[in-house]
Amino acid sequence: MKNSIKILLVDDDEEIRSMYAEIFKKEGFEVSEAVDGVDGLNKATKNIPEVIFTGIVMPTMDGFQLMEALKKSVATSSIPVVISSHLGREEDRKKAQELGAKEFLVRGFYTPNEVVEKIRAIFESKEYKLKFSATELDAKKIIQDAHFNENFKCSNCGAELILLIKPVNFQNSEFTTKFVCPKCDFKQK
Ligand SMILES: [Zn+2]
Image (cartoon, rainbow, N blue to C red; front, side):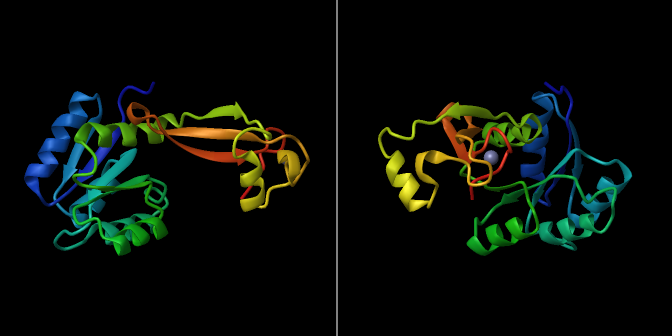
């Protein structure tokens, strides 16, 4: 495990910011803080963080404008950004996705510790490959509904597909899954 991930916290709400700063420090992150988008852009340019955790609504430059500004410079364009949403508006979620945010976390939906885990997971990118039975339970239904080949063969090379699962939250046994080909790494849809 990587021991000290450099994170930049951007939020104009000092209370929220210092709460997260404390938690991330306790979890072994190297924390810097910025009070709004302009400050965040400045700090991200001077001392490039490995991840940015930012609010949306802020004076001078909001979280989305910050993301757009980060993309303009090669040095900062690939920094993963996690959005902390206060309102959880659907249009904000869409915008975050369009801009390539790694996560869109609605405040109150996740405990601060879950937020830390989600951000840590970006760096661990754990994934597991499982064998899938094409004959049991609802397998046939998936074949039909998703228009997969019969017998779950890769539509590119014909090898038997596997199920790739990635943890979202270990504590809740929450995973995302995807059918992939073990041979050609072809993602089925
Ligand atoms: Zn294949």
